[in-house]
Image 1 (cartoon, rainbow, N blue to C red):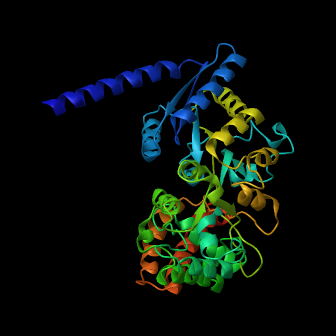
Image 2 (image 1 turned 135 degrees about the vertical axis):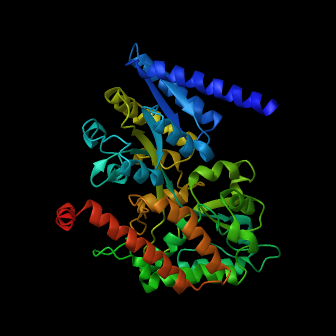
Image 3 (image 1 turned 90 degrees about the vertical axis):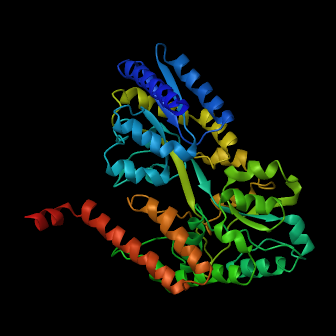
Length: 436
């Protein structure tokens, strides 16, 4: 009986929400924005920026729906399927290809171009948000990886400086692991961890590209195999905690601040958790170690703002996106979220070269470091990244598969996906002839 009553209440509330949204759908002066990576502080800041947009555009109103990360993708899909898509949506990089392939994201090109921003904008910002040279999202910040290290544990181990190269990284992890109860590296073996594999494989390859000109994965190359062998050996030799093969982000961060492990591959948005649990003088950041080529390719993810194709108020929606990306609004957003800003000068303001942000700042300024971007335009990449690589990577770390077998498995998958993408998107004439 109670269960039936609860279901009834949910249905009634859902109907009421649907009706309210339906009424506002027909109001040309009302916009709906959905955020998917929320916190109370973040939502408060967003609401304030929406209020300033309303003040600058009399008669315009903006409603916001805040979704928890774990439920956001499914809930937005339900809204779209029900014809109730928001006008503006927060868009993580690895969602983009799914929405674009389904025709659900609006082309930004007629409404926004780089001339609308000043020269301080990061050079590739528009490229990152484009698929087939069509702009579908504008990043508002970057998840750039750097290496965090525990200065106290380094001192106890007699290590004077953080690792510069991958050889240094291995030797440093080994030296730190000689301390009682300490492992050198906090391995992120669960969901979200594959970007470390991609970094070490491309860096050992000395090539940031995932594919050659023929569409074959560079993970077939010996450098990629050597990269997997290096991290496998770190784990196999006990230089990473045994249970870290299953660790997610929260476990790696807690492993670091508890002193269980002394180095951590991290994006700056996670620093808040460390700042509340550690003395800021006890840890620091450094760029990801260099490979044999003298280069390193730390992963760069992003999250941005997109306009949904279903929106009947696209001009106003794009105007709202421009407002959110305005320099002062963007600075407030970057400072709160901890993401690397899209404006270079703001990065210098946020990341002090002598403070915890030194690793990220140096990465953005030194040519030895270039960004590695996942091939998020591939529709298959989300499942590959969150399931295939996690499970097979764990099998490799546990000795159930060799680095050679693992690299080939990933390369086979990526090559097939890339060649399918090329055939469907870049050779329309060939495809037409094949169908004649």
